[in-house]
Image (cartoon, rainbow, N blue to C red; front, side, top):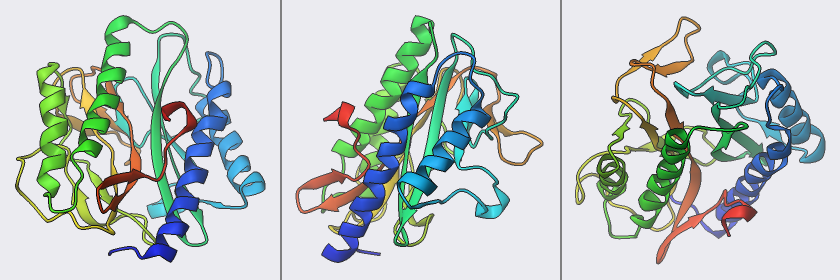
Length: 252
């Protein structure tokens, strides 16, 4: 679904709000706070300050505003008042905001207290994977170019790419076509066309790529118990590349 100028303006607003949630919550993310508390702070900020809607609540039965994925959790971790952050943890916060019907979807890794160098490196290389994927976005290119760029950067750094979960088209619909794989072959797949909006959200593992879903039906972990990291942006395909709709001020 290609976006016209008016639709793009709606996507820009939603994306900016989603980025602002991650900027706001940063000062609260520290050892001793629960993921449940972080979820409530973000929920109240979206509803009361942004006058917007948290997309995750009620989505396929999910009950929280955020996904909070810690250490070996790859994605879809459920915030919980009993899950207390401790020094050494790495955590992804994933948030989607709806404004005027449009969705802005983004996530960021947070380092809690004193984090071991190998975990810091995983987080840094995963963010680089996201940027490599974004750099591969050009009208006339192929969706496979994105996955190839991500996979190449991850594997040359001796990490693996999660294959079961992918980026997605986004707009008035939360998860839309096309699927954006984070692995694959350059020159393969669907054409990249100006006006597309989609997320790129690589999940990169310290160990093997294999995953398992916990009994809650949501939480996805690495099968080998080693840590995983993820970063996500919503992007718009412009006439000369990618416009990041969820860019945070720290990235500019």
